[in-house]
Length: 395
Image (cartoon, rainbow, N blue to C red; front, side, top):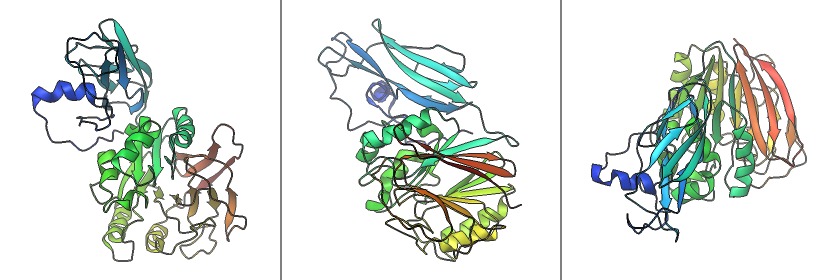
């Protein structure tokens, strides 16, 4: 299903071409100047020495569009403006127009080429099918991601080979979730999957009051601006992104919205994700703050909650919001703070822990089927820990 970012304010038409050749950020409908772009240039007089297409990789669902950008440079590395660029696609899976707007038409891979003065730059596009009810859907992700480009790139490479919807489970760009943190650490790694990513915010995003740069980066994929909680359907599952950085008390706007959202859903199975864990053996440990949201989920028969915050992997048996084992109606929690930040250690797991690792970075892949699900923790290259299993929905 397409997830389109918020429409930016319209720019004067005269500046549109300059924006297209200097912006290095994947967007769907419009582009804004990037303060980190190379210093512009010598204009039209210098010859083109190189062509770069940004982003260089991206994933789209069928029917979804994204805007690519051709960065032209002269022999001194300065960006150029005013030179003609032609665009072409290697496959009918994706079509590209004269502005660099690429649209997914059918599942498959395509190489998009931008040519100027005989020189070419390329981008690799993967088109995946639109999720359909009655079919298995993949949800994959982790939290605590871009502390460094190296760590985030290792898990981003796993995503490169896994189709489906990506979730970023908070603390996505360190240290402060600023526009610069997202541009320099998240964008070059997990950012190449931005078009298919649904995020939730972490506490590092709120180092700036209200997490403005988090909302600006993810746009409509993060739900209504400034709120940080939203829901969507994926096949036969109802997926809910919650904001554990704001008021979660019973009767709070978020808790009331969650109960209404759950009551309105007609899906058989429900999964929620937020940054802070209700249960954890790690450094940060368990928190009672999310318990009212857990209670709403439990009352509605939800199956799974995915969290981060503690930088390790933990899987819990189904349990109540109070922590009592409940194999018939309990919620299974996964702690997946393994996206790239440094790992946290512990030795003694708390009650209801079924599996854990403090030694592996990786992503959690969930295959969501009508009435059931299966999971697999997939480690990065060089790490060896695996975990897998399956469960059924409550209703």
